[in-house]
Image (cartoon, rainbow, N blue to C red; front, side, top):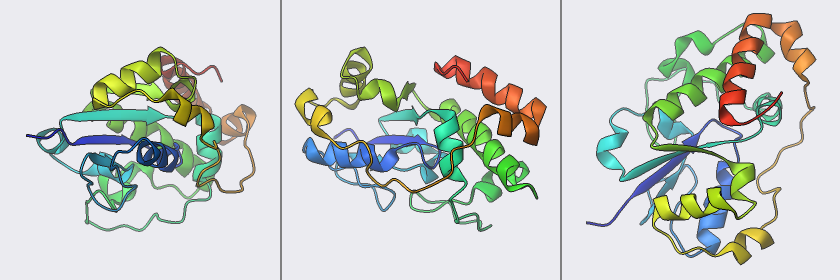
Length: 196
């Protein structure tokens, strides 16, 4: 039986970049539309039940939290629905406490709780920034996906695939919004390898 893998994380964690990278490497990992021949890259999938029964390996991709939360602020797909698929899952339905009247706080809560959930269902968590360095993380990533290492492709990939314009927030903005939540974000970020 062929291995089918999932790469997930939060929205705005460079999942489109990873899908495009895998395509250039010759593998079929569509971005948030359907499960391809080799797997899928989808942040929505984190909220779907029973993933461990479907996928051979589940990898959790993270990106710099400040950049990610800044970009999350441009998201407009917060609709509440009970639909849970790899192509759309409502974060509010899966984790109702994410919803908040303060939009920045909602984005902060989404980043924190969605990544915690993604990590809990995953076999391995990695920083996309480390993946792009073609070192140990890249080697481990290739091994876990059982794909051929092609570092020349990742080195030639533009790093701004699917980017959006957004105002960058600061750690001070997070503290001004919610001190306790910011401390939780900082602590978790440190566990992931980021110093905020």
